[in-house]
Image (cartoon, rainbow, N blue to C red; front, side):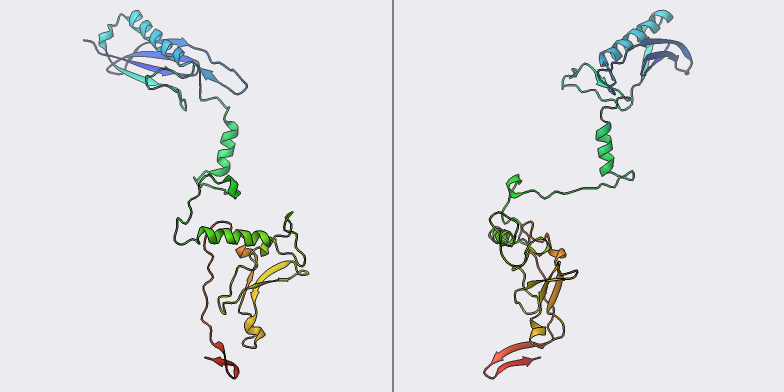
Length: 265
């Protein structure tokens, strides 16, 4: 048997089939064209059935024109379109008549959106969006021990809502308690355990500060017990998780006895 090899190159314009001997010498070639469809601007499609028919026809041409017995063909080499995907069912039947080829640009917008999220080096950028509770699809209450309980979370949410001054049902008198100061009434001082209040300072008093000045007020220190800008805790309770401010070691304690207040080391 005189062994032969056939190679197929399925290009954009058609299929080129070549006949070789086992030494790599080209004995003959045949070309069968097929068309590209353009159903919309930027859409480039070809029919996989046309590819198969071109392979069949070019093979027959090679065998007939060179008098080669089909049993002499011992190997096939096939090269097809790059970046092409042909959807089929589990039986191998085509799911659509035409399939996009490499030059199709219908997904250009999706590509641009993709590379807004993925850098050329593969770094992925993600964004999160806070959703209202009514839009939550999954809710597992009290799932993590480190989180506050669901009841505590709901109480905090109600307290935050009461501190708003721009709602239809929460119009309050006095100073505004909103924005960066939504945690007013929820924080305790890590030094003395008293409730932290909100003070407005800087640029005419527009920046809220969480502050406990009990030690300074009692003459025990020249500085406040604790003082934090409003912004670090702005989203601290947007989800049910525990907000903890670890207490620092106090250099002295103050207690009240029969003779009044006294200082103890």
